[in-house]
Image (cartoon, rainbow, N blue to C red):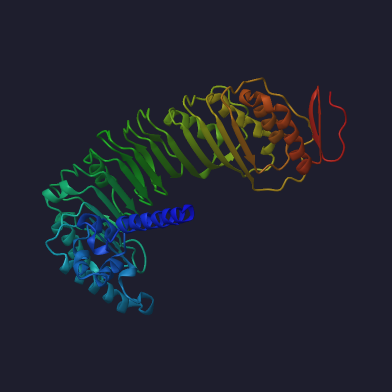
Length: 463
């Protein structure tokens, strides 16, 4: 009786689970997906793959035609690697034309075209821009690298084709390898949020007029835009959050971006004035010229006093002694220095870098990466100087690489370790690590109550 009851319970339990499984099993097919969700999925696929989804369901056959994003690049041409030169160009043009005819009179949110061009294709590109206007495209990206060379062969973007209502609709423009002039009646892009200009041939006055009339701009990227002149934006860019200026021949930058949060700069350090930037959080700078450390950080402290995270790369000269009156970085918390030292003999003055720590008292994280362009033939000998104490009450993390074994490097390291109050509980461990490190690169290290000495072979008692 008991065994029968247990068997029945097991059967009931098994049947119960089987019934639940049958009831909860989903019988959903891909073709049952809501149209808006399917449209989102298709927008993530390359256009060629989006078209191919039509074989999965008869309901999907024309679904790609309402996909809000169109991206044309080499992948649009089947077997692109089998074609070269004019044959590939013609197949690309035919593919773009066929898709655009299918999408005629339908709204397209985003249009991206990446293609190598020459002057014979101007008519085709103009027709693509005309399609963007008629389709009310919000995000327009044209990457039109010339087949032969830069310069006069660049495509001239036809702003004259943009009517007033379409200009008001544009939110993102990305132009690469083009040139342009503004139409006489140009009154600005009132809703433009992002502007990316790469390898653009444009005059100072045209670019200034354009930026001065983009009052809602949030992102601006200028890459290899050679003005050979200064850039001054007359009206405040009150909504600008992100600014990148890379490899541009611009002799001066002057604009007002009170909400700026990210600033990226690669190039020669010319005068920069960003106005009052209290919300600036992240800055990355790579200076493509040799510069004294004092000059660089005096200029940067004036331009970026409120920056919180700073990455700095440069060839720096360390001839200048300790700087006493360096301007303050009042909110700097994280500092990365990537320093190439081009001049022989300046390594003993590396300790002058401690000036930046006095100028940034709230720094919590410090990274210094050294790269010397010469070999140290004789490691520093003699007594290691001790700088006056300057407590770093917030310093929590220190990471330094590229040591060659000079006295200046040791002086800087010891100054940081001995003054980092937040690291005091690990001071003995840090000192042991310093000794271990320097024994590997500088021969012997000796520490006594009188101080530190470093040598190559044998050390005498410190005094």
